[in-house]
Image (cartoon, rainbow, N blue to C red; front, top):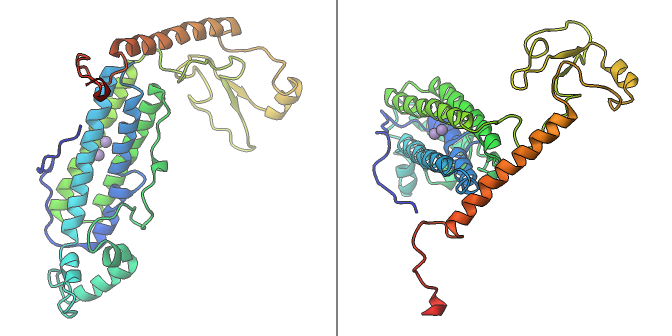
Length: 319
Ligand code: MN
Ligand code: MN
């Protein structure tokens, strides 16, 4: 259940209209890294998490709801930045008074220019926000990632928060309005907070790597392929121990020769690792049992009712 409170989460203000910046800000309204994407992503992810991980359900729904609050702030800011535009469009009988609210003599030209570069504000939305990005591309559910595995989804969310943060940082370079900057600073900072929440939640699920149940094949998990000639950069991504499995990176200088020698990588033994086909099969069996128990036990408990009421409410057919 959602309950709308008319207060904005943050006191969004603008100094003066700025249709050009309003257009840029659409990126965080209906864009690929925007607030609606974030809200819908965490909202959709939350359903499959409710029974096995009620604490993470709470986290995802709380952040999803906060992202809706951010969407509201961004929409309100766009609306304020377009003040004048919407009023003038309603003033159908008078074409000469356009954009008095804007500074300077170039105001009318600005308006006409803006109407050309973003026709949506001028002729489609009547001077309000539209669910598009800054180029007028409609918002799409394709921006939303949800894969039904919490460790995958949380990693995806950490990436989403990183992108949302950097887009706010870029946007702040394009406005001098101190009020707008303050709002963007708030919104950007909340993404920094969310990043750490998702990171901490991921750490509470152990083991969380690799995502899912099936383990990587020890023949291939620690190979680095030198796939080009010339300079050969070395670093912790191809020498020393791997970050999660702790195996020793094997630098394959000549990948083609390795393919030929190993009959297409089928005839080879794992090197630089303690993992074997036997140990990974054991781990997979153990993990399957654990994950499946988490889900079934939680499902029985709620008895196929989402909320926690006693089941006293009757069906209409029984009355
Ligand atoms: Mn946000
Ligand atoms: Mn966020």
